[in-house]
Image 1 (cartoon, rainbow, N blue to C red):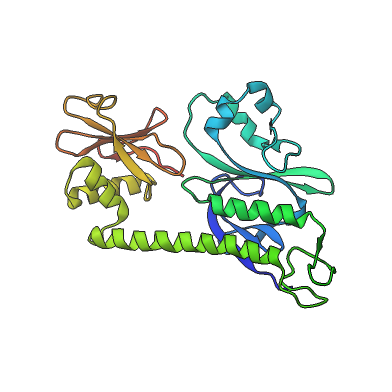
Image 2: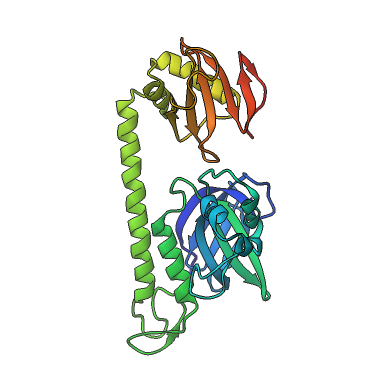
Length: 299
């Protein structure tokens, strides 16, 4: 049967694909495999659905707050299928961190010649959503079963759309298509919402509108602030929130602090002076920008 791609989404790599952490890659669910490709859609790793032993989305908060002895062994019990626990790979090292950054990871365990392997990618902001996970879980589960055509009793594979013996359309493939259809509908809905938001924002970049709204400056000043963030490698970010209780006044009288929410942290700090000029941008106790100078860039 010809390969069909049910789902394709760009994600950021954490470990297991032999490329650098944070590199962009594409995760694809097909009727045969879970695939990881480079941004040019060239396969890096193809995992047969039958070889997937465990899959889950897990947050750094869950990892840090769970029993340290369990995490130390790199295992979280009974995440999927009720079988052996989820093997975390390098994520088990997060137990040593004290700061929770609200980062989610897609963890995939699979076997090659009986050896357990792990792939982890970043899965924040609904990049890997519940509909996809339900479709993947269902596909993996059903791929491990012996399936028989309800009409003629012939054995068929999960990725067969029709029975090869009698031509009956098979319900398992149809069910996966329902999952994927829901997923496509959700994506189209959000595309529509984004289009409406852009029209309301007067065609300004989304980040400019966020800065203007949160800091209460006009769009020209917001564009200046965005340009500084671009200079340090923050061309895109998810949101920004004011934190007057903790951050205001830290950089001098009248200074204001804002937390920038990115795909890697909720704690990039922007400080503005009383005239809404950028004083500095800080992350993990380091200055990335201060008083007109770029000191460091986000990779």
